Amino acid sequence: MEMTEFEKSVILKQLAKEKKIANSTFTFTEEYDNEFDAFAKYYAAIKSNGFISKILQEIDLMRDPCQLFEKVSKKSQYQQLDLHYEDLAISNRNQNICYATDMVELQTTAESGRHLIAAQNLCTNTVLINEIPTVLQVTPLCKCLGNEATSLYRCHHCGIGCGTFYTCVTCNLCIFCSRTCYEIAYEEYHAYECDGVQRHFWPIWDDTDYSYLSLRMMLYGASRDFDASSGSSFYGNSSNNYPYIYDLETHFRDMSTEQINKVLYSSAKNLLYLINKSNFFTKFKHKGCMDKFSLYIGGLMVKHYCQAQINNVLLTFPNLNLASGLNTMSGTGKAICPTIALINHACNPNATIIVYAHYIVVKTIRPIRQGEEITLCYSEINGFLPLEDRRLVTQHFLFFTCRCLICELEEAANERPFKCPSCENTAIKEIEMGVRKCSGFCALCHRSVNMNHISREMKNVSKYRKLYYSSFSIEHLEKIAECYKTIFPPNSLQLLDIYNILYEKHLLWGGNEHPMERLKYGLLIFEIIETIFSRLYPPLLAGKLLFLVNVFETVEGITQNRDIPPEEFELLKKYVKEVFQIKNDLLFYLPLDKISYYVTLQSKVVDFIHSINIPNRSFGRYI
Image (tube, rainbow, N blue to C red):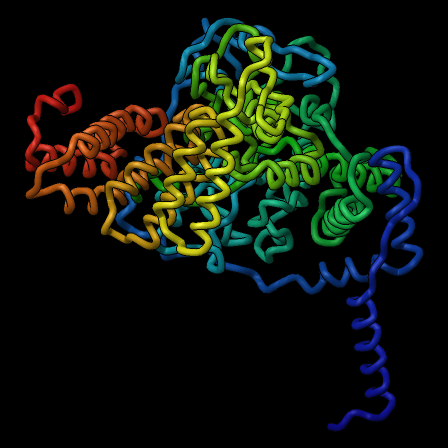
């Protein structure tokens, strides 16, 4: 039966209305007092201008339900998927900070705010915090996100890898390692999120979106009747950590208009989802006026969104069955850990985070002096990136300016990069270039020093640079490196840059023809980096392991069946030393039975040493 003209016109008007709603935009610019006031005004505005219809349309048009990914490798040894760590001994627990050892203290200063310091001298590989996340977000393993090669099943509530599990009968997507986890999750939050998680209402896989995590933080508070009063000088509470979540730092007032609108929009979506797709508000009828209470919930999620953005721990769960176990992921997530949130950022940290089953552990990666601040490199930041790129993240997204050692080193590199010929330190400033004389002032020697060699070497650098651009000969780059060694200290960023260029040129142009040159500059690069970062810094350790493995095949082929010059012999000694030292570095993160990736390399190196024409006693301390 054909539609009448009237019916067609009604449908066309409805489609036009839906298109108009879908294309509508709204920017909130009103003044506000705090997060709650901002949300109340935003919510009133979108109800008044009709923008709320767009959000309701998004909720009504959620994606079709997604299903659990079922192609996880059956070869996985599920009983060994997780690193296991025992709880802190009672004698070592901090009497003032939950989940922390007695080797740290809580301190508050104007410069660093509330932070942790070492209560005594600490050695490498010391456990400082052993915290169970108060709120844990695990990315569900659905069909559109699963990877047959690397994915593993993880509990939606505690994050533990599991082979057998309970599946939510409603969403058929979220899994739980035990009946206990399932019941706790369902009572606390899963009953309200179930439909949305199944239909990808929240972009949980997006590391820069905190809408789901803010909802979970609010639901955690709801399960404790929003009790935000600590009533104690003790920091943290394993049964009700909500007072310490509520008190986490927020930078709502530092956000741009665009960022604030994103937070308000996400919180409004969360609120309307709870109203239309869950029975969340039925359990809070005793709160009185539901309109006021719903606005309070919306404002609370705005606050928690901002807190999550700067206080979350970004998790990458390892897959210990693949490669080195260091840089292979079996899933991702985010966690809110109020005690770990006390630790400030440094691009060259003195501690790191390791996921041990359902614990998140903070361990030292270098010795720390008593009174020194404990620092972590936040997951959003790569310490190897240039200063400008790191500052873009810290200032624009995390709302602080890092003043750690490496940031100050890079800032000072342009101000006083030259080394003093007397004390060999990077302390020369106020360089004066005369017609026949170049002098500078050393901040450590406290006197003027003759710097004529700098003028001479910089002229040579300019000459070799021109020759390189005309011939692209690696020889001229090596000449520049020799000049840099004369005027810059051995750990300077200038030398690091030129060594990086030389390594890449030998790799790209020489291929496998110059393995000893690749080995030489690769080792020089790591030597400089390790004067700035701990060798246990995860990106550094993973990069070095990959370098040692990749360079071995070419070095092995070039050194056999010929005499080895003294210079190459010294390089081989350094290489073998690194291969055997890195075993202890890997054991910092992995159990002994999970470093087979390294053991294979070690056995190859031992066989290689026995096969070349060098007395084995030269390597006796290593093999």
